[in-house]
Image (cartoon, rainbow, N blue to C red):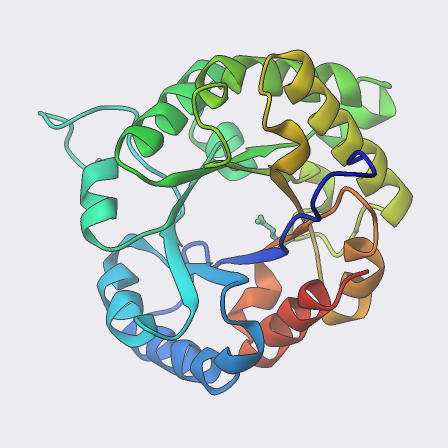
Length: 258
Ligand code: PGA
């Protein structure tokens, strides 16, 4: 929890479109977001698939809605077929790069060490890494949630120590992603407070000021309660970010949080 004299953290909501849609649906979604941009400017961003980053940049420039990437290479330039470097993402005007999303960790084998290298590349290119952490259902049922979060956080602390306030954390319990199951506000708050404390213990002095987002089946109907928790600073939104009206409603919930 932030200290009483800590300046309140600004809210942030990021939409993770994952590998969905095509140019036409991306165009329509961006148009829908632009229609409500005034309400959410400065507190929201979208992470489209790589091929649509240019489209997002063209449409969102000057709107106050930012954009970022869903991943970034752990390598610098070179013979890494299929990879996209942090520098390229910076060229596309990205503000953020997600690293360590659970789908990257479980489906593509991203390790804690790789996640840390990706975060370092993002920072070196001037991007804000959004470091995603979270436990599986088996971890939670085994009582290992904090153990898993600690391992994932400890791996990035050496990188984040150098980041100042230019990094974001996202707590995404794997069992809540795309399942319709959501962590209860109390479960989310406990995990967020743990993450913040672990970062501080790992020498990340900016920990009280870092945004820690919640992700996992956030919807307009549960956003207000989740974002009302003292250590929940906004959300990382998957499915609901593909529907402009829902994403805008979630953004407004974050902007108006207590
Ligand atoms: P969800 O995904 O909102 O569809 O659960 C969240 C995420 O994976 O970032």
